[in-house]
Length: 272
Image (cartoon, rainbow, N blue to C red):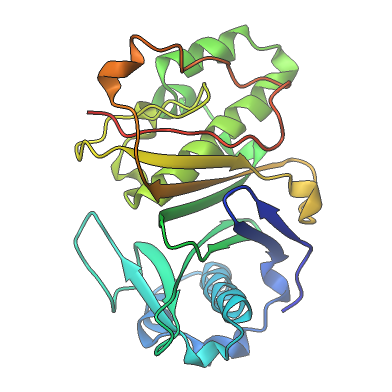
C-alpha cells in the first residue's frame, strides 16, 4: 500500500493519507465476509472499488500498527443507532488482535480518490472520528440552512467572501468528525452541533460528561493537496462540565477564523 507521510495528532492519534487508486483490490480476501458482501451491492464499479480500497487500507493500517498480519485481525463494528454489534460492517469501527486483549480505535474518510485514516490505542478512548472533504463539496444551495447552526451562519455572514468556502468546509469536517466519534453519524442533525468555539456544543441525551480533543489536520503534512480540509475528533471517558455551568463560565469563545491554530486541542463536554 503506497502511502503518504504519517501525522501524529494530540491525544496520540495517528493519521495517514493515501490514494485509493493505489490500493491493490486483490487484497480484498483479507476483509470480513460481510464487508465483501456489502461491496458487491454497489452498482457503480467506481464506488465499489473505492469502498473496498478504503476497507483494505484501514485493515492494512491497523495491521501495521499492531505489527500483525492483516488476516489475523478481527474487525469490530458497533452501531449505537441500530444496536448492531460484532459481525456488522457499519457503525464505529475498531480492530482486535485475538489473544492480545488490546483494541485499536480506527476511522476513515474518503474524498474522491483520497482517503484519510486515523487510529488510536489509548484505553480511555471511546470514540474516534476523522473526516476529509474537498472545499467545493459544501458549495451548494441550502447547505448553510441544512448543516450550520445559527451562530455558524452568523459567522459566515461576517467572514470575508474569499474566506467563506474554507470556513464552511472547516465547520463541516469538524461536525462530521464529532458525529463519527459519537457513533451516530448523521442521525444527529449537523445543524444541532455547534463548532464555532473552543469546544462543540450539542444536545446529548445521555447526560454523560466526557472529554474531547478535536484537531484540524495539517493536510500538507499527509500529502493531500490544497483545496481540502480535514479534522479528527477524539472522544474520551472522563470528567466534564455540565450544560448548566456554561452560563456562568466564559468557555465558548473564539470564532473559527483564519487565525485559528492549525492544531488546537479542544475540550468539550456532553450537555445535560
